[in-house]
Image (cartoon, rainbow, N blue to C red):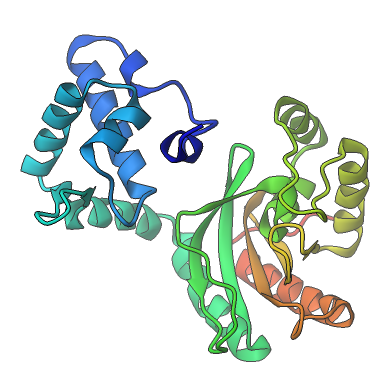
Length: 273
């Protein structure tokens, strides 16, 4: 499988399969924008065409239309296409409209100041966690994730926290409908083991990622809840095992859980029993 195909494995049906006149062009254009947003280095015409399963001529026409509206730009030297400022502004408007992101930022900063480690905020999108905000550790060796990047729910601290507090039937349906990919040798890819882990998370109130998403990295995470007591988002603290050994996970877990509860209260939500 080519590198381009690997990048979009598991994506919905391609833009080429959309139908319906102007709506087809709209869906295709938005799909190209999504591909470009996932490739910070930019993509060549042939790469975009392959990812979208479109003819190069059709792809070029769509890219030019997006460029004329200021959504994307093309580098003259390498000819790579990438998102432009207008797309970035639209993306930021989503973050600003979601008050919990802005509300959480000072708490993420406080967590980093208290722990010395990177603090993150993520939400659930299908079977993945999407990271929307981050406050980086000042340490030379630190955890960094690109905003908008994704991690499997079952193989990340934020994802496991969100997964644990989903309604049981919804969680079971999600786990049965998606392959539990083993990201590292420590990833819990067995449904029974994962269900036991969910029970432990609900009992203590926070999730631990012990090298399940990346070797050498430990993470603790806890949920932020809405007014119905449903998981709205999750925050986490992540760092290298050298600074977050097993003995420190409980201490950080309590701190992250307490901070998530503060954010929940400020948003008018409540922590479920």
